[in-house]
Length: 494
Image (cartoon, rainbow, N blue to C red; front, side):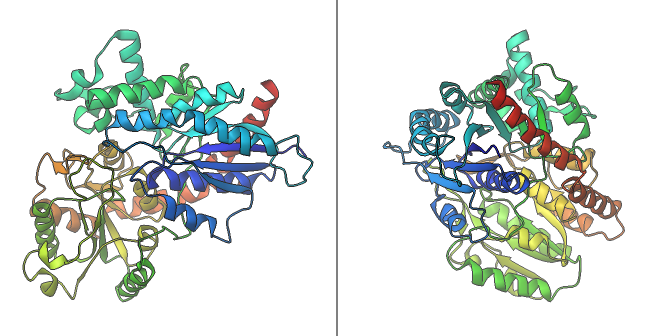
């Protein structure tokens, strides 16, 4: 039996690392010929060590998956600009090449050990780590991209790349202040410029993203964390795009084992949260959470509190403090005293209907029957988790491609209501472009918990479709099979 090994190179951020680990699990579970080495870049101030240690200690982890934490670069973390992060990734190229030669190739097909991982079959790299294509080329192995966002975002990237390179159009300047609806391949509706991903509206970020899009064409395929049932038009458009390599929609890829690697003391906190939810009636609680990197200003906190209190509905609110404005890439942290940021008396007045927490075990919460709605930033992982568990969304997108995700949830899938679509949060400066007032929060909460709404029925239908797509015969199951077959075929053609 011919064995092969894939090298997976994720971005060292939770939103990218977790789905990369999950797809690695699915690949080795699907085909016993495949082994995987996950190379984790160790960027300064980006704490992934604890999560890797948690994974390595997980007894259920398949022994054909191994993790290698790469050495940290000996240079200070100057800032969190996209250009600086991309420069750091490029500096990892010789390290990755050396590690693969010494720790992957040397235990490959020449080994007589029966547990040998086998021939190096290629690199599966993150959508933002395409510099590693050069390393794969040097080692004469195929490259594949793992696109951790949706197919709509990928369509945008290819379309804007074409506009720039073939027509000389300046994307960031051309769309930044334009108020218009655009015809974009792969979108059934015209796309307002107000929901374009932030990266395309910044000159530096746009150049970086479009350069990644150009490199995608050098690969043997793009694996997408989505499915035909969620984005049929976008996937069909990509499949017909002559400039795109083969597309493999294999999602939704969701971490269902509840081990999110929370902070110290998180197990006790999770027990308290789940006990509180157990005491609530089904579909009566709205959950508010803005992702691993999401936070809001203290002024905005007070508006959210007012909106929740006025709504009169039960709520579970993950409230986290913004990191200091030091230009570093740090996640939010828990408040020492919630009373210092919330309106005076809020916790006492809402004690019977609400619970304010810090870190949240999001998957465990969304899977609980008491949850009836989700006030979300619409990050792609959170979007997939809400759809998987059939929880309607009140959309409050903040940064990255979240506005585009919210647009799809509201206008295409019809499983969400809007809180505010034009809100933008600058993660580096820790400021927003506007204040979302209490009235918008109250209205969003009331609408999402409306038991008579067609949204609730629709999201349950999509949840069932998402689960079926990963079963034998489902579209994502079939697509993953195609990817595996092509991996073996591409080895033979090298």
